[in-house]
Amino acid sequence: MSDDSWHLENAEQTLRDIAAICPFVMGHVIVAAVDLVTQQVTGASVAVAGEPPDRHDASELLRGLAEHLVPERWASGRHGITHVLVTVVCRQGRVTPTERESAWLMAWRYSNHLRGAFQGDVYVVTPHGWGGYLDHRAGYEPCLEVA
Image (cartoon, rainbow, N blue to C red; front, side):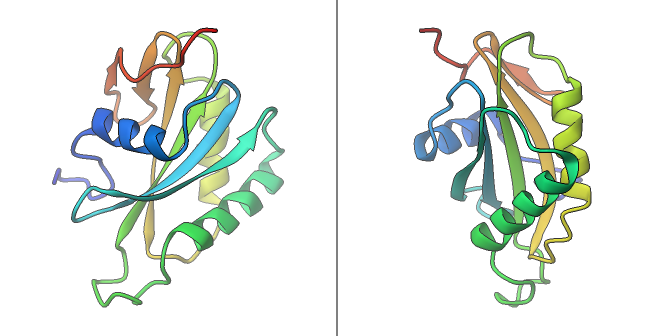
């Protein structure tokens, strides 16, 4: 595991694992829980299909998803934090951070989910590839299929 506990060891593989649960579709925003020890995706759910909600509604939405995807703190006895929550924004455009990804990071900050999870990175997936907002890793696959 890297020095930062919330970092994914292999972001590309984690994105592939998320896509196996929730296929990447243009306009979707997906939230996934990743076990910190095993790096396995333990659950994923489509948060938004279409236009993103305003900041307050986005925080409420993320709180509900965190409560659904991650156990309560101390439930496992493993120092309280067992997961990292990853957000995947599926959109057109370049694989560079935009205001949309920044808004999701801010929504996580105010979600107050109180679950056993760190807020992880926001990844963008486009027809050109994928990239992380905070960790700056990127690649060509997985990507959105162009219809």
